[in-house]
Structures are given as C-alpha cells and as structure tokens.
Image (cartoon, rainbow, N blue to C red; front, side):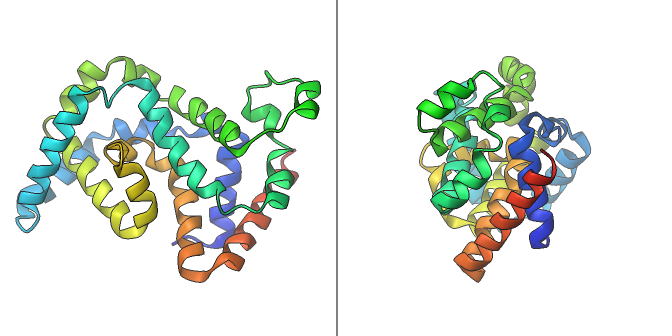
Length: 226
C-alpha cells in the first residue's frame, strides 16, 4: 500500500482535475496486460469453475445494458459515495468548498453555491461524469471494442480477476458494486478510483484517525494547488 502522502496526493489530483485520469483509458487499451491475464487464466485451474460462472453473469449483465453510459457513472459514484460517508462534515467543507467550481465544470455560480447546500452526492456525480467522459468513445463503441472484448480474450479475465481482487481488498466496496454488477465495470475505472479505495482500506485496518490523517493531507494538497 502506498504511503498516506501518496494516497492523499492522488486523491487531491482526481478531485481537482477528474479528467486527468488518463490511466482509465490506458487501462482499457492495455493489450499486453490483457494477454498476461489471459495466460494466467489458462493455468489457474483452481478458480476455473468460478470464473466460468462469472462469465455467465457478465454476459447476462451486458445483455441487460451493463455497458450503458450511466452505469459507468454509477460505478464511480458508488465508490466515491462510500468514501464520502466517512469524511466528517467539517472536513467535507474544508476540502470540497474549495474545489466545487472546478468539479462542477464551472457551471455553478458563486451565488448558487452560497444559496444552496452542495452535497457529497452532487460532487461525486460531477467527478464521476468527468471521469466517464475519458472513456466515452469506448462506451460509444461498447458493441465493438468493449462489447466484443468482454466476451472473449484477456479482457474478460482481467475484469473477473480485478473484481475478485477488490472483494478481498475491500469487501464493503465490492458488495456495494456487486449489487448491480458494477464490480464487472470496476477494472475500467480502477486507476482513477484506486486511491479512494486505498484510503478506505487504511480506515478499515488502521482506524478513523488514520483515515482522517489522509484527509488532512488531501486538504493541504488542494490548498497548495489553488
């Protein structure tokens, strides 16, 4: 696991500039990585039955619209909302009030901000939308690049193994995503969401004080860049 400071730095970067998550697209198009997962899948006989079951779940979910654009947004929102549940209100104000204009794409005026409560869910939605735009061209081609790749080859193995890894690493996030099969989309957005998941892992293993230490570092990172 990265140090607190590194986790905080990456969280601040995503909050300040969601469209900087270029790794999301790079991860989707990583053919060598897919080939590695494909090779591992051939020799991993212990989990073969489980993975075949997951492939059936994936096919069913795709047929029911899993690859629709709003599901990518909901996947990201689910993780961010779980993260925000543990951010104290005072810390929320300190972090988000400074970046709401950027997160909202500067479409919210100062008077609107002053007159309304900006909720965590709104902020999460704005960040989620911005990140999803980085893979919008792949979503548009979901019946081609993504759709075909998810049904065969190494990408399907990467999808399943990433879901399994998340289940072990952070069961709470996994089950929140698994409820609507969003865990099958997680590998597409993992590079952007990973620091938030890592921070929650710190909270689960080291307690709320350690988690809030990371939040304090996030606030300092944001203040330093604005």
